[in-house]
Length: 512
Figure 1: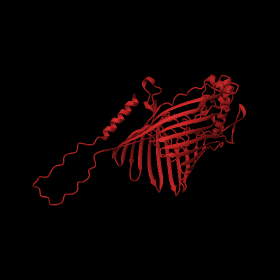
Figure 2 (figure 1 turned 45 degrees about the horizontal axis):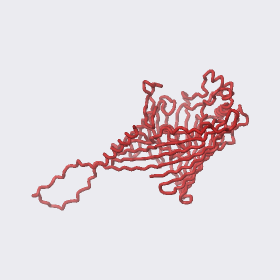
Figure 3 (figure 1 turned 90 degrees about the vertical axis):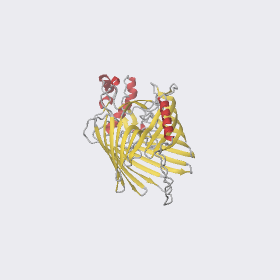
Figure 4 (figure 1 turned 60 degrees about the vertical axis):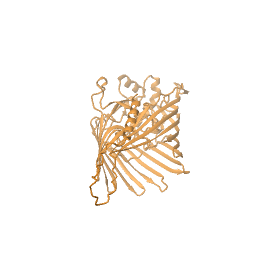
């Protein structure tokens, strides 16, 4: 019902904008006795007080996906569908009330099906599970963007609603993005979903200043927020306000884009309370090469680490279970140590419009060798713990690392959650291969163990309105593997422990 009311209201608003202004004052006639001493000048063109412009675009998309479950690995695959079908219908409407206001929407209707599950029985044998349909993607209605923008003055405008605002310069990853759902590094332009916010912006001649207030959505139904900022009295999980405030100052200095950012949040994107943070982004173009830097500076960390005593062996896990000792904690939550996240990289544009991008990410709070060893030990305890009746899967990374839904419920192709300290992102794109084909390849590497995920893709622009795509995700184990103490000889690398051996997709996207 709420969706139909929203569509009806949008239709009424569009019809109202389409009406012509009929309130102009009548032109006063000159008296007949008046003497004309000069030829009448051509009447100036008077622009109406407002005019309308409605632009409607969108697409329909279907995605067929096959995943080969890694039933011989350590992570369980019984909840991983090997066959999935996704259908999405998207519409984007922009209603402009010139010269100062406009309404913009980006809404998707999403449905999916999954089946053909496989797992391993108690004896380690691969078995086919009952073919059950997975629940549809929630929410079925995904509001990617929905906002109103008004320009009070050329130097002052206001935006209210849901929008994706990114101030950083990174292509595959943005350390300073504390507002939006995390993007897919294999297709950075695919993620359009933003957050509910209010933004005041002052674009001056010498610099641009922005101020954003984003209340945290605590509950939502079908993509529509039902509880923001704080919990109600009848369902009060805490008495705090959940929000994020962000400010930006941008200027072009010596042909370099310079952006300074300040953040202050309370229990919004993470467990930090009253946390200030500072961000910096730089970008400069040297001919065909664009170089950039993006950094976030903060004290402490919300990263979870495993309790070594709980994962050293089954007896340790059992003792932690009896004592109700958590397997994972956040020891750096109140630390005063500076723990920055820094991304540096560059993009080179070739004469044939091919693009090559290389970026390096450093996270001070990322897992070191000892933390990864705890992770490897915990993975090795899964089969032994189940046999002993102990649930040892309650630690970071026990679930699937790829193909999960974003915070809005809109499915992403690849969900990247970097746990380590050093990563590299390599992207190459070659357009106009055989005129209508675009070839791309993305490599994400953990520089500690040299494990990678390779993502090749081929897009065919069959017509002006139809794109057909073939994609694959292939995790490749690295040579610097960690051994599992409870299962000697089982190597562990970050991208080598994924619950699938490979994933292949076929997409058809029709634009209108």
